[in-house]
Image (cartoon, rainbow, N blue to C red):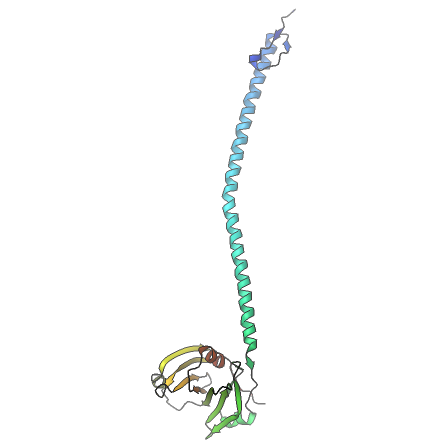
Length: 232
């Protein structure tokens, strides 16, 4: 009968009797192969985990950046919506003005007449002020009930008139643009009169004068809302 061999504790094998030394060697070799495979698998798992962790760390800043960008865009949209709502509310507070000119007045003038479709809250058109001078100049007054009056005149520019020469006499001259062109403002008569001038695309010269300098926002509102009268 063959000899029976028992594995030693140091071999890492359980104390199971083997009938032959060959069986023992095979079992020992299998155990060694298993140990090596386990170590390799553990090493690969650690490497994979480390790679995945690095990839996640690289992705996190990008995700945080995208989140921050989305938050900024969201805040900007809310701010824009709020500003638009305020602007519309302020716009609706200004008085809407009906066309004060009749078809007869428009025809008699012989050039396009304009009127401010919106006015600062305290202003209104003085209907009694609509007059024509020598069939060439049309006058209109805007008042606010507090002795502040704006006189508006409209006419065809005189032939060969040099606007640059006129504007060079303005004190504290400034300009701003509206849909009908460029408005030039300044003081004349040694500062006693504040004058604003605009020539429309269809060649109507509009002058607004007042005893005091008007707030810039009021000027921009009046000139920015000038509309051509429409004959009935």
